[in-house]
Amino acid sequence: MKLDNLLWRFLRRESSKDVAKNRLKLVLIQDRMGIEPETMEILKKDLIALLSRYFEISKVGLQMDLHREDESIALVANVPITSMKIRPDAQAS
Amino acid sequence: MGKAFVVTSGKGGVGKTTVTANLGTALSVLGKTVVVIDADIGLRNLDIVMGLESRVVYTSMDVIQGNCDLKKALVKDRRSENLHLLAASQKDDKTSIQPEQMRKICMELKEEYDFVLIDSPAGIEQGFQNAAAGADAAVVVTTPDVAAVRDADRIIGLLQQRDLNDISLIINRLDQAMVKRGDMMDQEDVVDILSVRLIGVIPEDDAVVVSSNRGLPLALEPNAMAARAFKRVAQRLLGEEIPIPEFREPNWFTGLIQRLLNS
Image (tube, rainbow over all chains, first blue to last red; front, side, top):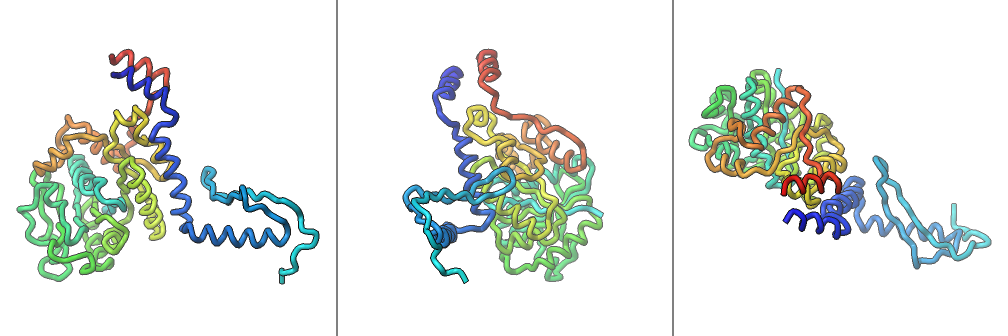
């Protein structure tokens, strides 16, 4: 029975407590910042609009997420650029 | 001048009342004078867990309404001279009491008692706000599961917003067998997530249910694992340096050795 347990642990990819911990860390980033998923979506749209004035960007493969590193939280964005715009769209005031 | 602690968790069912009753008992056994307050107006249960339900005559509501003075409303524990209970009214609700009134009761009690432990209702609404109003410090209770830890994080945030920064964490109902299997977060995982000072880990123990069945707080039974854990929490609250026992998952090698030795 004990050996059974041990084998199970070898075979299993990730223990359920690690899954729990990772899920908690992610959800707490949003909880702590008070950022709702809708707010994240609006932020995403705003950033795309801003970046689109300077670059042609591909929305395929675009990623934007909050990441926790130790005690700080970072906004990490991966924005594939297909080409530069020769002249930025003149919208800035 | 004593110190008032709010015992809180956010999520219900993690053991706030059990912790309040047992920590209060353990502190009184160590010679401290203690009042435990049931702040769950309308859903009173600290009295029945402590086996004092038949002795309650007055409640905190009677004190607030001036039906009796504070001293008269306190119920003495059956076994401990130093331990008293201030019960909650069962027929009122959380809106019938104001934070300022709770603060006044706590101030008055702190003048005569070493410890005032306030058993907060679950939730983050007015019941919690009332319970926290008179507190100098907080004991946050959680169990090692995702729902309770998430709510504990929320409650810690709310305590800090109120400038209650003296926060201690108790992890309740830790199942050592599940931790060893990797199926339950251990104390290090929980502290890593919540980043507050841990003052105790209470192991899962059938004796806790048995003791509340009987209405005799566990802390007086030296053989129960949970009772010893509560005693250590009380000692740490009094400033003693007592290491928290490790219930860590062993690495594969020590795990193998342990398993071979045990089989």
